[in-house]
Image (cartoon, rainbow, N blue to C red; front, side, top):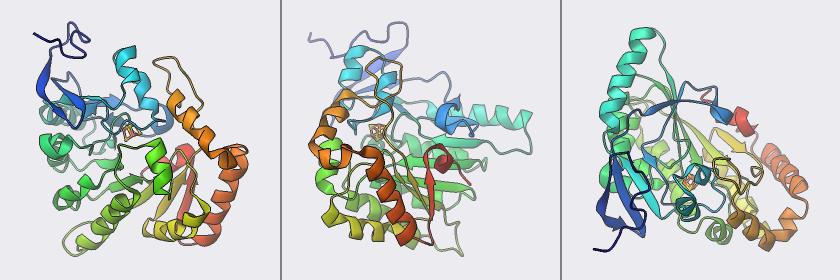
Length: 306
Ligand code: SF4
């Protein structure tokens, strides 16, 4: 019998390979022991991070989360495997019960997700993220959802029940050609902005809560001059824009940083990256002058709920 690609990577952990591929990703299923993780790093202001999956089918070239892959082969193949935390909703209910026993008057702050996309393609089938939302809405947490996927609009019916919700839609560039270079497996820019528009339009303020909406341009990728004006104009749909430079690059595992793949692609855009700091400052100035009604935040301070 042919060996599965990563068979044996998790000896001692009950994991099964679901006998299918989803796109070109190997799909695994695992029972998680816990699902809420104490938040740290740039989101340390939150109580917890919540990751319904391990791995991410979008496989963005610059993704720092690849550093936390189970082994070096899987780190190299970032984007080509995903582990489904199949019991996530059950565990979450228990962990939220426990939180409220200790903190009866304090809703937890939760960031979903820090090292995966909760609405990557497999979510359309497994609905793990939807199950988590169904659990959470009973507990009224303060929730931030970070995604780049239009699949989120499937859940508008539940999202509008959250009183404290911010949706961070990741759109690091306004140029499709740049997106295809840095993150070829991800949804188009248009699809992401349309998803935000749909959320804005479909929630009736008399029947549900409008979420706060951020567009996270993190890391800030180049936007071609011919696309810039139209892109900035479309950002008006958000109430906050977050910009951030690239992470420092690291080749070691278990160290979050920009991957070598992205460093190589950056060379194609030398007119932007020859003076990366100046490009960043100029873009920020344009946001500030052209989006007077939108909050512009940088780095860590932009990722909070408030
Ligand atoms: S969508 Fe997010 S988690 Fe997934 S690969 Fe891209 S940056 Fe990483």
